[in-house]
Amino acid sequence: MLNRYDFLILGAGPAGLTAADVLRRERPEATVAIVSAETHCPYSRVMLPDVLTGFKQPADLCLKPAGYFVDHGIDFLAGSPAVRVDAAAHTVALASGSVIGYGKLLVATGSHARRLDVPGADLPGVFVLRDLDDVMAMRERIVSDSLVLVYGGGPVAMELAVACRERGANVTIAMRGNGFFRKSFSDRGNEMLLERMREHGVELMTGCTIESMEESGTNISVRFGDGTPRVFSAVVFGVGTSPNASMLDGTGISVDKGVVVNESLRTGDSDIYAAGDAAVFPDGFGRLRVAATWQNALLQGRVVARNMLGHDEKYSIATGHVVSFFGLSIAFVGDAENGQGTRVNFEGDDFSLSVFIDDGHVVGAACIGRFTARAAISKLINDRTEVSEDLLRAMLSA
Amino acid sequence: MRLAYKNMSKPLKISKIVVDRDLCIGAGPCAVIAPEVFQVDEENKAYLVDMNGADAETILAAAESCPVKAIFLYDEDGKQIYPYA
Image 1 (cartoon, rainbow over the protein chains, first blue to last red):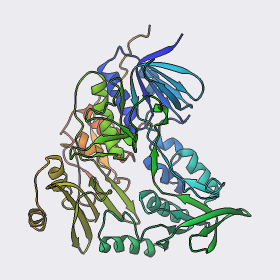
Image 2: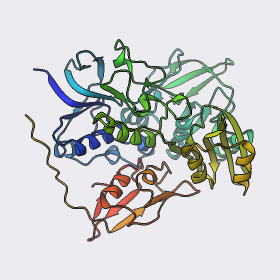
Image 3: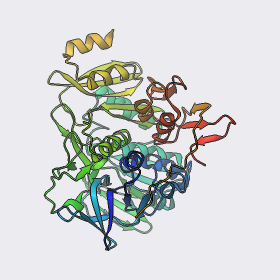
Image 4: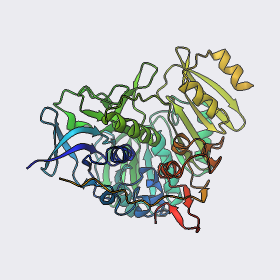
């Protein structure tokens, strides 16, 4: 007989776990299950760099105490990802071959890390940083005095550089652009970031592409776009993510950079919802976007669960995240990474702040260093306050 | 037919809250879930505003929401409630 759950959740990250918790609390008699592609206890990916450095052990990353699922009557189906959703039959097929029925389905499958599409991108010794297995494999390969090439100009590249340096490895960061988060910061802000990297012994290669990679003994020989070959002990890509949404192929549910949902986090199918990194949602300023942050996943998990229970709550909050490296922190609030709207810069001795104004509203901000205006800007975004560039300048220089 | 789940938790009493600023990365979900208890400062670190600003369940939810487990909760006997051992 088909195993069927009132609420079936795909994914055991902050969105899926939070949703399960809310569903369980508010509907004690309902059947709830979580499908996880991995066999590990659900864990915090945010702490993965700490496992690479050795500061934390894998068990330290567990998000739930032992016995949590049993105590809460949640079936935790681990070790096999969902591969196909049949929306008409209300079933989900897993890679293992099992088929599970659902009343309401939540797609909270997150995303996977992309690799460059170049020869050698799948060689042993070429990594992405996405799950615990990635990090455990990296730990074997990246040791003191290793030469590590990190390719990318985003948060993963930054965090990897720090973790590899702490491990005693030599780090080169190569990127296609001329700096980190180039859509977010001014030239001065960018220079602050590059300078801090250099101060901590990280070699930087900007305007750089990779042509191919091949094994060279126990190392990886990388041929750069300009033809130069160089040998590294390991290569790690930090070149962005793609949503895990292929299980929805054939359902007719729209997927574009993520599973498209409305402001209630429901897809075009009234029994299928999405939340977290896998979801593309309306941000309240007339745009669809992905907010791939912990805070967003967790808060969407709360709202989506209530909507699965029959409420109609709108999700509209400007979430943020922070990237820290070598003692410098970079905070993002709202939409500040996609280059939306006009960037207004505020510079000080110990900060570089970029505020994005689109159609008379502050839609996001990114700040390197001291961020005194964080609360004020979050409020402007969340309240949808109309503001001009002049008014903003007056407010923030006061 | 499955039995309705039983809530196993005992009444929760939190007597002490510690935010480890070295661990904190300023991700900030604590300040969204329990804004009367936690806020994030200009260095992007969470700090304790008022440990009586929310009920114990809400404070536990805020601590559990931290992606780096930087919030420590203790009971009256000084025993650590969260992170779970």
